[in-house]
Image (cartoon, rainbow, N blue to C red; front, side, top):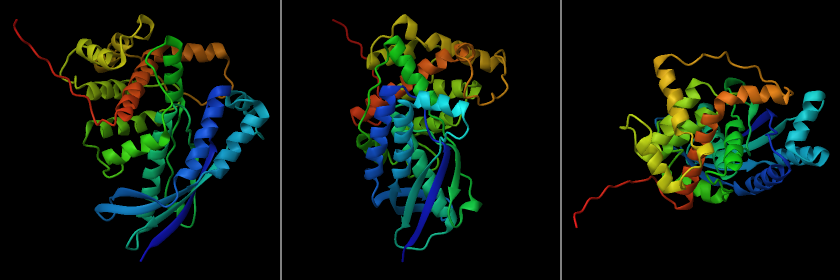
Length: 338
């Protein structure tokens, strides 16, 4: 027997940040996504049944493509369209994703189906923002469906990835590319990213931390700084070091030497040290504000520059692992006498 559920994810704030070029690339990527998932196998650890569940996933993203294309057609770019929304509440940012989840071999409880849908959405969001940073924003979300009232959808912001990419462009380092989404998804499957709810491998720990960063809204707090520092240390195998010297050297081996303006390591570690000692100011969670003056935005972002630069480094390292189909980095030291 099989158990099939069609779940809709209503996204009331689906239009991400983006200039003209980013807007075009984002819509192109969503068009690829719309045709990518057709009864695609997907394995998820099912906490309800205590074992690995096997499913087939189909995704209809046509309404998302329509909404994003309409934003481009009416304003030229997502940034311009979001400004129109700030001035006129009738300008909609919403779109809907439709998911068909088919459980193989046996009937499955609604919790298991919605859990699978949630893990799939997490992985979709990660894959898109790794392939094209800033391309997938799922905010003010709600499940629609027969059992939907029993489950809360999760929100994920693309702003951290977009800001990191902009930082890399502004400073000329590190190089962040646009990857094939299929290559990113194949890497996830190689790692078994969806197979466990508790990440064990280094790469999967980094990906789960990316999910947590995507849940941070409007300016990055102490948790984000700690997560990014932790990601870099895990990727570079430098957790035993008390300073950033070896970490920076290892990143340089992979990505090349950073210019002074992009060298985030001292700034990030000073911030983390201040957080450990309780010396860093504690900021109240900010109100989402879509039409703040540019001067105010710049003032708010000043203390985040080190975090944005560090997220760019994490993105570049993950992209490098995907490009080389690698699971992790290994560093060895050798000595010989001549």
